[in-house]
Length: 432
Image (cartoon, rainbow, N blue to C red; front, side, top):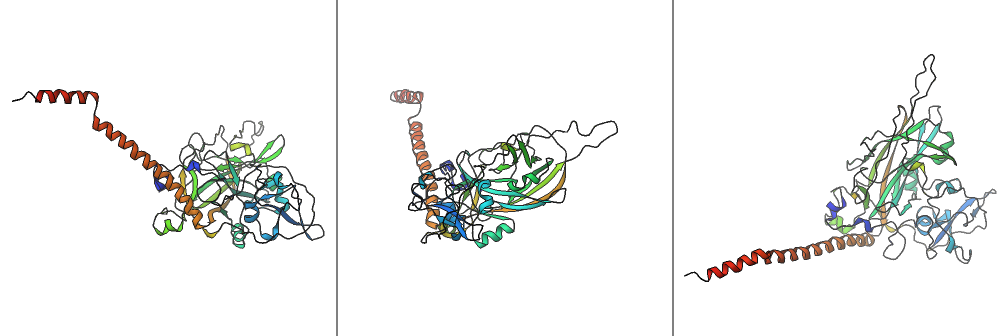
C-alpha cells in the first residue's frame, strides 16, 4: 500500500506529526531547528585542533549544537558539553547551527551531505551534494538531519550512500545542489537535472514543471547581488503537482512486523537511488557576418532561487580551554538500527515553474543513494503506532455514531411516509 491512508486506514491524520513532536520522555527526537532556544536540554560545542596541534574548545558563542545533533552527528571526542558552571547564562541564548552548513564546514567539516564528484568541461573536479531535512505537512517547520558519526556511516558516505537517521512518523525531503565550496570553480553555463529517482520498491519520483514535463534543468550557480549561490532542487513528494504524495517515513514496531502489519514495502521504500546529470548550454554556431549568441535564453528554472536553508554567515571564534566531554550521556536513540517504510501522505508539492527553453549537451553524471534508518527504541515506535491507531479508532467511533443517527432517521421515514402510514391504517380499520 503506497499511501498512509491505504495502509493505516481512514481517519489517519499525518499532519499531526511534526519534527518537533517530543519523545515519551519529553526529549527532542531530532534537531530542534534553526533560531530556537531550549535552555533545558544539553548543548554542545566542538573540539578543534589549534595551530600548535593541541585539541581545544571552539568558542561556543560562535558555533553550538543542540542535544540531538551533538550526540548523534559527532563522535564523543569531537564535542564538549556546554555547562552552566563553565559558561554562566550562555545556554539560554544558544541556537543550533546544524542548518548553517556554510558557517561550520571549514571548522568541523561536512556533517550533513553526501558528496559526489563530477568532471567539469575543463577537466577539473567539482561535487554535487545531497542532504535530507525533516519537515511538516506544509513545509513550514523543518530541521536538518546530520550524518551519523559511526564508522559504518563514514564508510557509507564514502561509497555515495547517505544514511539519514530520522524519527518514525515524519515528513521528510531531500535537497540536491552543487557543493557550496565549489561555487567559484563552476562556469555560468552549467546546469543539472534529476535524471532518475527511484525507491527500491520500484516507485519513481517525478519532478515536473507546470506542463507535466520532467525534462527540467536547474543552473548550478546563480549570480546574485550578494555573490554566488547554489542552484538547488528540493524534493518532498513522489509527484509534484498532485496532493497526498508527500514523503512520510514510518519505522514499524517489532509487534507490527511479527503480526504481519508492516507495509509490504518495508525496508525497501526507505532506500532511494538518485542519478543526477550535469549538462551545459549548447553553444550556438557562429556564421559569417553574424554575432554569436544573441537570442539564447537561459531559463529561470531553479526552485526557490537557490536560497540555502539556514544561516550563511561565516563563523569566526576564539579558541579557549581544552577539556574532555563529560561521561554518562546516552548517544543515539537507544534502539537497534532499523529501516522502515515510506508512504505518500497528505500535503502538496508545487510543480517547478519554468518559462524558457534552452538547448543543452551532456557533461557528466553522478549517482548516490539515500537510506532512511531509525534507532528509536521499540517502545517509542510502538507509542507512535498507537497514536495512529487512536486516530483511526476515533474516526471509526465517529462513523458508527453518524451511521447510527442516519439509521434512526431512515427508520422514522419522511413526514410524508409517516402521514401515508396513518392514512392507510385508518382505511384498513373500515374493511369488513
